[in-house]
Length: 443
Image 1 (spheres, rainbow, N blue to C red):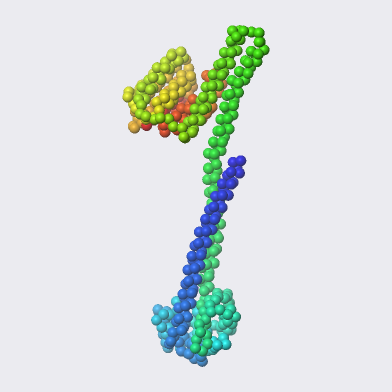
Image 2 (image 1 turned 60 degrees about the horizontal axis):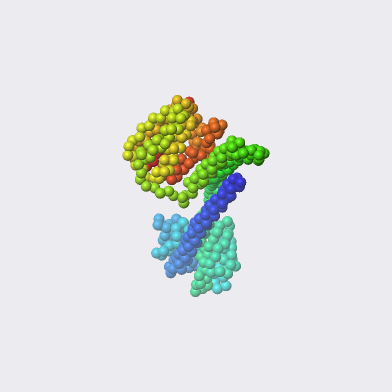
């Protein structure tokens, strides 16, 4: 059950984070894609405008010569002065004007007549063969668009068509580098996404196990609680049933003659009543809606009153009691509940102290808190039991605890009162073979 719950938690977590990553990557890619497309359109427009300017080049044979984009040898600032000899020897480049094409861009321009036949020599910053220009022109014409893109000789080109007095002017711009940026971004996102998913898988698995662990522990405690409660109820019920059978098997006897069995039934009934009462009390403590009336009260007097009520029991057990109570200490809480905690701790201390043993109680101010400690000599509590003695039905020595008549609920009730109802601390320390001390810290 818990394995399925963990896997569901893991799947939901991975799917949620994957969707979030996908949306984030798609958003980043879309923004960059739009920016790149705008830059391409802007560069293409600037180049087209540069080629269209009067004096941007000399026409020879009906074609514009000059007006190359940056990247060829010329002026340091990237502009091309008029009078510069063309690399192919076909005339001179003219000055591009005040707005030259973008530097480091590769572009060329072809002029055609109205029938889309090339006229003149293409204006280019590169020395390419005529077949390349012819293929570029034919591809652009076949697309029958004023602007578009195509791939030629392993490069991606964008073009724009403008009408002229003698026909058309087609400007071509190499956008391979911009496309590589977008392609690399997809590869990077894919690699990063896969790596993140692997990391997230193991991270989510770790936290899923940690998240499920408290639920599993609570479930196991609940199962144990039900099993223990059933076991504790089973014993007195069996005794009651047995004694009832004895009574029924001797119907001619008088009540006086059957009093022994009746006393057994009554004793076990009282034990069951005590058990169910404690269970109901614990349930009320667990219910966050249940609240007791809290008010400032004198805890010193409350502890002294409990000691007075316990004196007879302590004397009967032949146990010495030493106490040191600082007078007039006040805490904010429910006096009856705190008295119950003191009663539980003293009762446990007396039960687990051997004859002629000693119980020591101390109540003092500690900084801003009040610290109550109850110590008893005896066997002590082993370290592995210290963290569990406050669990319901937990007993370090089951056989001895049954002889003492306990159910292992007293310390659980005390912890609920101190920690849940009063936001204090209840803990224990022990030296095996010597003593055990329980501490209650209240503010």
